[in-house]
Image (cartoon, rainbow, N blue to C red):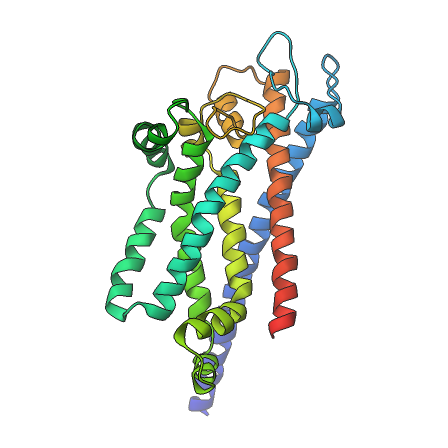
Length: 309
């Protein structure tokens, strides 16, 4: 009987512990939901004040399609399109650099590199991901622009979108490479062996078996990298400048959505002013863009999982 009481006491203690862990995990999940809802509520309230201000009644259509962004000038214009174009500059340039190189690096680490080489290369990539972004910005300003870009394009300015895009591409490259490597290594070994049994070469197995099987993880890495590029602040602010320039020339200075938020929040803008409220309008625009990107990524990954499962 004593042994039975001990066993029952141990089981009861285990149930209490499981309930405690379950409650802690539920509280963490609830906290993250509350924080997200609080951010959405603040952005919604401040955006409502911005678009219904009694002195500057900014029209939503004019805000999205206007080509002048001068909230700090006497003649105020609130067309966010120059900031959107600047953000698109950075995302496209960085994607052209990080996506193909990161995909190839992930494939090499997963399929070709020896275990010893992989143990050296992957930690180095992860160290690059830990470098502060402001360091990347000054690297672009002091090295990439004067010694690389100006060598081929002497007319480029000190601050330009090309330099910022290149350095952001370098910054998010480890993210793409590491996630692609993890996605490729998650592919079952039996699929590779089946390809080799059919007479396929290493290249054919990588391109026609491993890559399609890991496509959902590969696409996730691309979307995460582009989202990081869209949301990058300090490197872009330092390297690209702070000129809300409506241009498609990557050799000119630009300003991104995050760059404007950083510049206006670090200035002497009075709280409650229209300039202060414009910061929340830009932040709301950025929130909608990143949310749309994540929703699109989920749809794409779900579709490819259905095709390859």
